[in-house]
Amino acid sequence: MHETIELHIPSRLGSEKLAMEQAAEEAKKMGFSDDRIDDLKTAVSEACTNAIEHGNKSDEQTAVSVTLTPADSSLTVTVEDQGEWSEEEFQKAMQRKPTLKECPQGPIKNSRGWGVFLIRKLVNEVSFEQKESGGKKLTMIIHLTQ
Image (cartoon, rainbow, N blue to C red; front, side, top):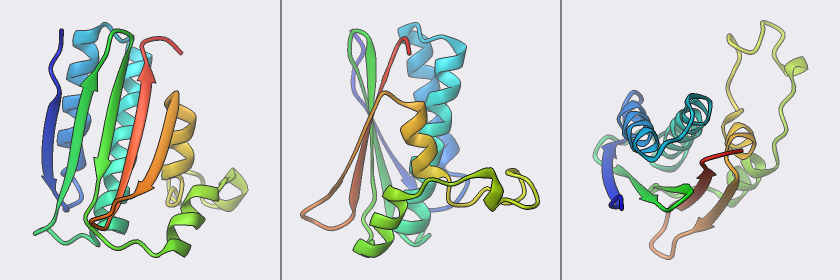
């Protein structure tokens, strides 16, 4: 049986790669396919980037907590920030459904604002909650098979 892994990364862009690679390593040990691992890596990267930028406002003294909890046929990933999201900002991110029409220079050159949308498309279950201590907690569950 795999053990729960806890990471604390600084709120600095680029740090999300540490969580992304750790999640990929765990998923590989669990027997996830390469495609599912790619989905997981993207979802973890987006979740951590949102926590860094929107939650912790890129304050490098404030950590983002990432927990990986393996089960028989799925991996649960939680990403927690310590920041103060405005309810308006949070609801806007939750309801956003971006389209390619919004990216006149192409999706690669104008790819901001796709994080929550991508996460919802790439994992099997996702939930967000306001923590009593402040900040947000995102929980993602990805199954071995789609």
